[in-house]
Amino acid sequence: MSASGDNARYGIAEFIAEVKGLVPAGGDDPGAAGREAIGERLRRLARDPGILARTGQGTARQGTHGMDIRGGEIHKEPDGTLALMLARFPHEAETPVHNHHSWGVVCVVAGRDRYIHWRRLDDGTRPGYAEVEVDWEKTLDPGDVVHFAAPPGDIHSQQGIDAPVWELVFFGRDPNVKPRLYFDPQARTVTSAEAIRP
Image 1 (spheres, rainbow, N blue to C red):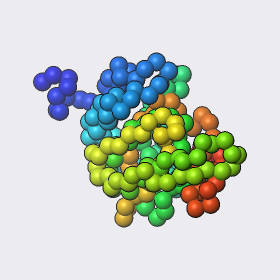
Image 2: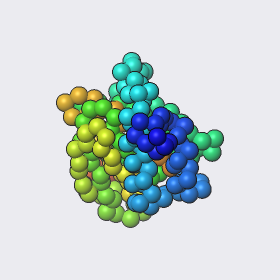
Image 3: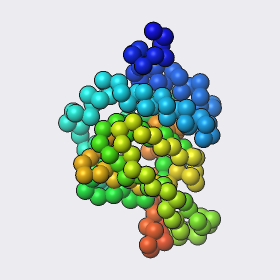
Image 4: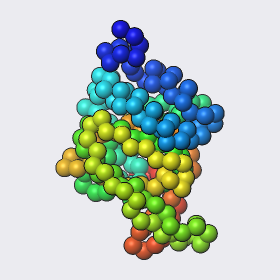
């Protein structure tokens, strides 16, 4: 069987080798078609026994967004591009509405996710002020993929449904290099904070 067959070994190394041919230099956004192609490969990687085994391990609390989010980085190039992460999001509370400073692709590995994509309406020129509204919302099951564009198209929130959800997330650039933007839709405010914190 060819290397692209469903029964062939397809792990992290194979995934990264293939996406290197899809992502422009510097981790720039490959566009919707490129993100969809990466999503197909991420869906295949999500079936890798090694990835699935990681979801059953007792991983330490990472503290992203100040929540009980677990998992972490699986791969990143030395220049900070092609960042692949496996993360567990809780079901007890929705994440704050936040950005990533990068385009990205998400694939559910285990559990179910309520994924909400937000759109920013203001021009970002007033410090501390932001207007955001729900752009679309999806319920994601294992193997389901969503993707988001480079800023300002990288704003979302999410929450596990009935139980924690495990996801593979691939970013063009490491989203944790800069402080994230956190949006309060009701108060129409935006603040900046490090993503990983106690």
